[in-house]
Image (cartoon, rainbow, N blue to C red; front, side):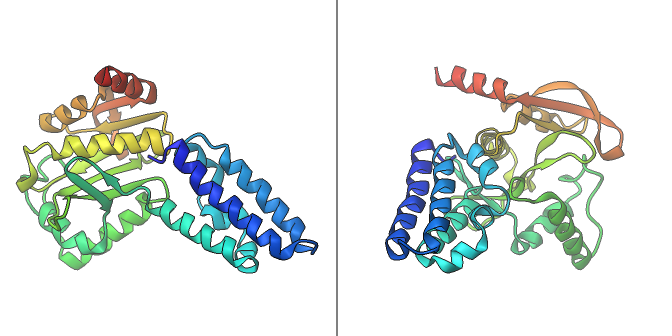
Length: 269
């Protein structure tokens, strides 16, 4: 999560860059454009947290917020904007006490394929993968294109300093509903070590504190008690069932932002 002081430092750099450009362009037609950029930068200074900052900036980053032309005409300002956008895009990489969570990449597909071809891993998710790897890779690539955006992600789990794939955790909208779900999957070698709970808690924190969701939900197979245990440990509560992607009613869990914050306050007390 980007704190208020960090937001002021980063947006303050934009203001400083504009002021330096102003010295070069004072008295010219460009000075009015710089004045407009300065006003826009001050709008960012008033953001209280990263969720608000993301809403104000929009999905195209600062290049979209300010427009591409000023980036070209005022190079020092453009350099600050490019750095800001790069850091902003990378801010959804998550860290926990043990885990590094980074966007699932094509280099992870061999590991996810091995996981998804394990009948025990997939016993509650429609059965083991049987497609050839090339077909599977095309399917996963297509799914990521549908699920992943500037706000929603599928993260690969790894221990700090390790390249071993431990599974994935995701945050994405549920199709044809207003709900956003947290989900996870791990190979057998990762079971029983608390990784799912640790990763899911990090994603809940990201969902509520970074992108400002009002509620996060989850679904599980009725017999998947291990997954249900993870969800309840993370604070989600059972609320009936949901017809998930048209496949029938399955247990439905939900957690509001207010409940999440109250739980954090209780744990910190």
